[in-house]
Length: 304
Ligand code: ZN
Image 1 (cartoon, helix red, strand yellow):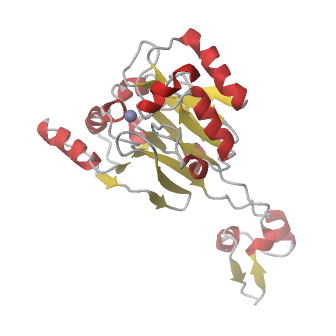
Image 2 (tube, rainbow, N blue to C red):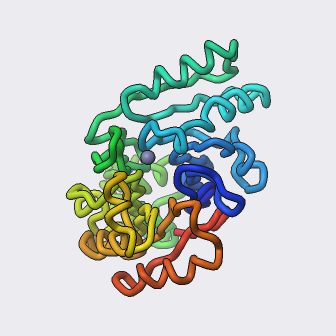
Image 3 (cartoon, rainbow, N blue to C red):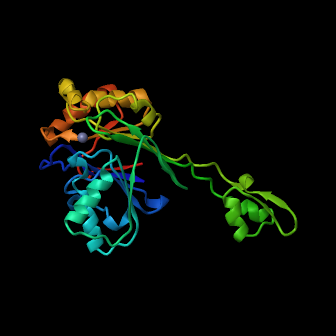
C-alpha cells in the first residue's frame, strides 16, 4: 500500500500546495484506490500523478468545509465522461448527500456509474474481507471525522511442499486448506489447514485525521497505528490561533502521535502562509516531540 498526497494545503490553494486530498493506493490488496477528502482541483492533481479516477473505489470525506469537498462534482462528472462504469461509494457526514446530489442536478450532470452515498456517524463505517474502517468524531466547528483503517491480518502461505510430502495432492482442496479450514479427504483422512500455514502477516493500521484541534478521540483513533496522518495547520507559536479555528499546531500533532503510541507521523494541511523553505523549521518542531515525523508535500508518496 502507499499514501500519495494530492493536496496538502489548508483553506486555500497556494502555488506550492493544493487543498486537501489524500490517495491510499491499495495495490496488491485489491488494486483499487481510496481518496480521503477531495478539495478543489483534485482531478487536476490526479492528472499529474499515478492516481486514475477509474480506480477510485471509495471516497471518505472528513467534513463539509469547501477545501475538503469542492473537487467532488468535477471528479465525478469527469469520471463519467471517461465512461467508467464501476460503482463508487462516498462516505461523509450528514449533508454530503445533499451537496453531491444538488450540484449534480443543478448542473444537469449525470453519472455513468452507480454512486452510493453513505452519511456516517461515529463508529464502524464498514468491515469487509480486507479492511475495517471506523470513524471517530474530532473537534472542529463543523461535524468532522478521523478514520481508522485496519487491514485484517493476512493468513500465512500454504506449505505446499509439506502437503505433497504428506501425500496431499494440489487441487481444489488446497484452496480450502489455504483458508485454514479442516478438510476430509477421499480416503477419510482429516487434514487441518492451519497445520500447514506459515505465520500470519500483521495487517497495517492507518489513522487519517480530518481537521481538528487537540481532541480526546485521538488516543483511540491512532492507538498503536503504523501510520498516523494529522493536520499541522500552524506553527507552535500560533497555537492559540490554530485552536480557536478548530486546528492544531505542529507540536500538538506530534503530541497526539506520542500519546497515541503511533509508530510514524505524517503532517499535512499546512497554512498557505508557509512556503517550502519553512518546511524544515515546522518539521523540526514536530520532531522535537515525535522524532519519526515526516511532512507531506503535494505528490509525496509514503510506502506502508
Ligand atoms: Zn475544516
